[in-house]
Image 1 (cartoon, one colour):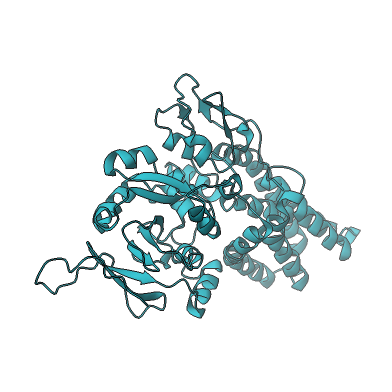
Image 2 (image 1 turned 90 degrees about the horizontal axis):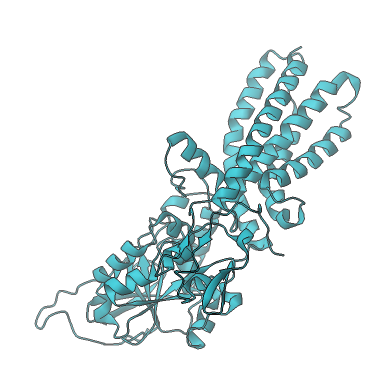
Length: 361
Length: 97
């Protein structure tokens, strides 16, 4: 790796090298270091290695998701100098990797804010990707000694937490809101910082939704373990114990709510997520109930019980996906919940009571 | 396909008299709710507003108000129980946005 030798050591005659950003040389994604007026800045690789892919896969399944971080501070990509652009991002490793892998061939600085390991948009919503942290991080890294220009490029979704005019007022740095997605950054920089309508539009494609479903499913299944526990206890003194078919019916409703509804989201009629979930849940339950002929007189309670209970579960799980979506508002979700929750709870309760009567009597 | 959520719920409000037409709101809005027309911002599509608050945050003359919060069931329920402002606090096992 070619290293630019901009600036000398911090002070004449001293050999202590000041680190602008703490880093571990053993990390695969560290490609070297660069000397600046403010100290040593680590250079990051734009290559994604197996360990990064494994890490991304793990957090998508909810393993160690809240502790997948890089140190906040300044990083370099390529061989940037004092005129190179500064990109601002979050210290969630998944975000950091998505960003750096799009920067091949670009010479730039990356200013990583301390967002407690949360992605840009969510962190901006919480205020950790925010005005105060940005101002603080500019000061801590000595950015104004490292670059001669006064321009920061923030991801557009960071605007939720950052007040651009306030940052300019307090630091002199002007804020440019760049594209929503990291893959557009090179085009954005090459075009002289023009973010097209396309680059600024938030999408929520099938792929975007698909990668979010494992965490939803894992969490629903974790809660389901206690449901299975209760089923097991009931089986100890049930006249007609729960079996494999009940398990399939239930898991089907969970998958319908956490995977199928999110995937088919815009295709399912209705606007409220709970309605969409209830509809797909009802289709699944009806199909399975008919398949098992549970509406026959001797198992009618079972059939009706499931028709009430399972779509409620799908509806709730689908409604929970509002938190992962990119377009639901607080007012909208509150309204949806006020209508849907009483229906979900009562339908679920009646369904469970019918099931219990059938199993125990 | 553009996603559509509930209509007529957004709390977004623009005071046209204060607006200086800088265009920041249109720039930061993730759902193209604003257009700049005749040197003033205009709310074009309020039903796409997700109340993220980016516009109000970046309006230099405070011409925009919105009850910015998170559209997340888990966060809202938590808010009801704890009596606090709903927040995208996904620490621990909780999942949201």
